[in-house]
Amino acid sequence: MSDLRVNDHRPSDQGSIREASLGELAFVFLKLGTVAFGGPAAHLAMMEEEFVRRRRWITEAEFLDRLAAANLIPGPSSTEVAIFVGQLKRGWRGLIVAGSCFIIPAAVIVSLIAWAYVRYGTLPQAAGVLYAIKPVVVAIVIQALGKLARTGVRTSLLAGIAGFAAALWFLGVSPIAVLGVAGIVSATSVATKNRLMALSVFGTPGMLAVPALLVTTGAAVSFGLGRLFLSFLKIGAVVFGSGYVLLPFVQAEFVERLHWLTDRQLMDAVAVGQFTPGPLFTTATFIGYVVGGWMGAAVATVGIFLPGFVLVAVSGPVIPRIRRSALASAALDGVIAGSLALMAVVTWQLGKTAIVDRITLVVFLLSAFVLLRFRINSAWLIGAAAVAGWVMR
Image 1 (spheres, rainbow, N blue to C red):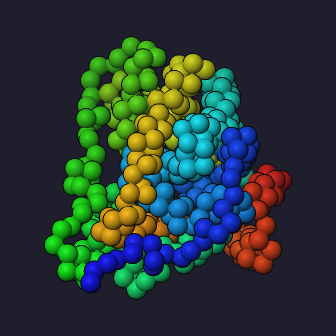
Image 2: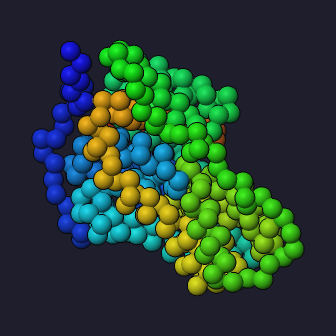
C-alpha cells in the first residue's frame, strides 16, 4: 500500500479564511509598501503577520508554498510573494493590484530621493533612522521565523534539510542551487521510503546557472529609454533572490558595458535601497532617474519588475497541482525548509550589523518582548523606531 495522502501531514488551518476585495488588497499593500523596511526577510515577516495571522486571507501552508515558489523563479522574492497573494485572492486583477501597490510607494520615495540627489549631489542623511530600525527588523524576522518553522520544518527530516541548506550557503553555494538540492533530497527520501522509482526533479541544473552575458565591456553607448527598459528587463529575468544580488549585474551593465553610471553613483543607488521601504529592486528606479529623469525612473521600474508579474501569473496555477503529487509535494516541502534556512542566515547577518552597541541591543530586546507579549502590529514598532532614531541622531 502506497496511497500517500499529500496533505495529511500538513496542519489544517483552512477553517476561517476570509475573502478580500480589490480595495482591501490595494490598501494593505500600499501600507506595506510604505512601512516595509529591512529587505526581503523583513517584508516576508510582515506579510506573514498581516495575511496569515491578522487578516486570515491565506493559510500558513499556502503562504509557505508561495514563498517556496517565489524562491525558485527569477525576480524579487518578497514582491513575488505579494503578487502570489493577490493572485490567490482575486485572480489576475488581484495579481496586478497587489504587486503594483507594494511597489509604487517605494518607487515614488526613491524617485524623490533621486531628484534630491541629482539636484544637490548627495543623499539625505538617514543614519539615525537606519540605526534604530535595524534591531526592530531583526526582532520581527525572528518572530516570523519561529511561527513559520512550526509548519515548514515540522519533521526531523525537514529540520535536517534546513541545517544542510544553511551549511551549503556558508560554503558559498548559490541560493537557487541550495533550494534545488533541498527539494531533491526531500523528494528522494519520499521516493525511497515508498519504494518509488521515479524522481520528480524540482529545480533543474539549468536553473542553477545565471547567464553571464552582462559582463562585457566596450565603448560608451548613447542613452535611450528603450535600451534602459531592455537592460532592466534582462536583469529582472535572470536575477534570483533579493536586491542585494543586483549589484554585480547592474555594475556590469551600466558601469562597465554602457558607461551610464560611475561606481560612486552605483553604490549610492544601493544605499538608497537600504534605507527606503519596499522592494530593494527599486534601486533600478534610482538609476533610471539618474540617467533618464522621471521617465527613466518609470521605465526602469517597469522593466525590472515586469518579469516577476509574468512568472507569477504562469506558475501560480501550477502550485495546487504540485501538492497533488506525492513526490512534487515532498520536493516543495524541501524547498520550503531550505527557504527558511536561508531566511535564518540572512537574519543572522542582519543581526551582526544591526546590534552593535547597548542601545541597539536594548531596542532589539524591547521589540522582541513587545512582539511576543502584546502581538502589536510590527508597522507601529518600525514607525516608532524611525522617529526615535531621527531624534537621537
